[in-house]
Length: 222
Length: 81
Image 1 (tube, rainbow over the protein chains, first blue to last red):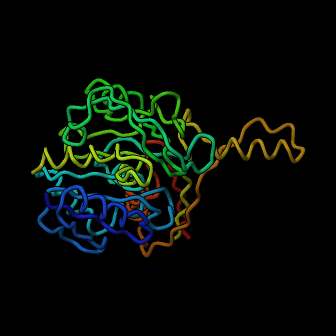
Image 2 (tube, rainbow over the protein chains, first blue to last red):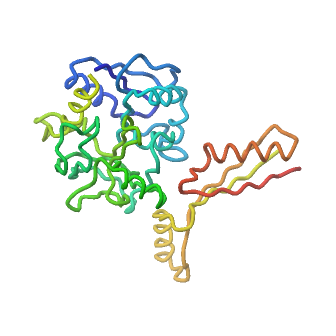
Image 3 (cartoon, each protein chain N blue to C red):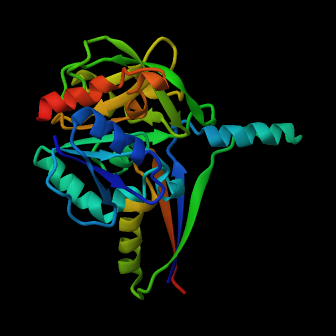
């Protein structure tokens, strides 16, 4: 599986993501600067975590209009898989590739801790190596993870089974609607989540439960 | 031509920052503050002499970038002097 990681000014988790992708997929991913206008030929594009453009205006708002995003949109329409983690999720929402928006955490504090994630749809390219309802441990680190959307869109997401990850066991760290931690587009090839699976891949760091997400993609795409 | 754009959260959208400011005002001894909402204000200088064209351009900018219409409303004021 060939993958690319987009680097924006202010990204800071791109190295963790590049490392996780290389370790788990066995293929070295390509780092792509945001000012590029064309993606290399890849199966997966990842928007990593960080604070692109210092969170100016709204989180992810400026990065979502970066030159490379035109091609990310175009490639996603042809079926290339796209994943946004943390700031990457915020960028996908601002770019209109996923519905809704990530607002300031309801308690106004930055959260950096482990949460429990429930896999609420194990039938996607991003989750097939988990079992339905499985709860796994994953770190979060964000100030704006409070997922919000209008009632109609929320009903549609729930009705179409497009909430893939939910904060479980009372660990919602930000007040997101329906404990939403990650959602997927209607076509099933664009997924965004606030937690950091790329930081849960080594026993040395406390756990390897994030590996299944990358292994799912490897199985689905390769 | 100068445009002033006010961006506010829609009614019913939770505004934790406004709530925190409301709380701080109470702490400062303003017990009569009923509620606070926080918004954004932009001034855009646009090189366009036709007010209708300027307004259309600012409207487009507001929709595309300045506001996220999932949660925010915007209002445009045009200074035609």
